[in-house]
Image 1 (cartoon, helix red, strand yellow):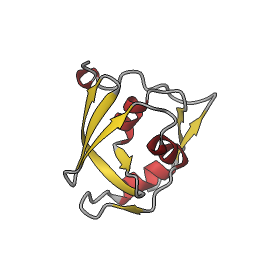
Image 2 (cartoon, one colour):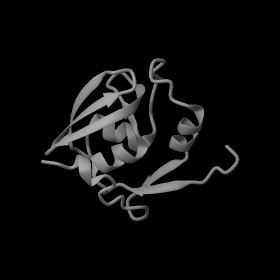
Image 3 (cartoon, rainbow, N blue to C red):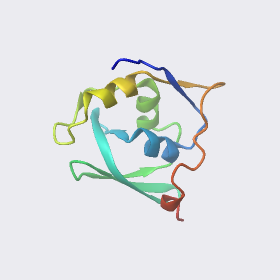
Image 4 (tube, one colour):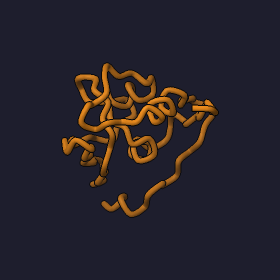
Length: 114
């Protein structure tokens, strides 16, 4: 990637808005999946990955997945999801800061049905 721009997002943004923006999901075993679809249902969301796995996740900034996303930890990438290298580079240059960063206000209002 020719321009390694450092992107910052606030740590206080809504977890589901962050998922909709980044489109990556770290599973419990550390595998990084690409997100195909997110259906938000109140405080829960159903995430469908490109390998057709489904995860039901709760909105929490302190969850296992939220920590792994903020710290950019993952053990491997899913072979079936085929995450492109440019997306992994973009993800690795993304930073999260408590006092600085984009707010991501309601990226996709159509998925925010309660």
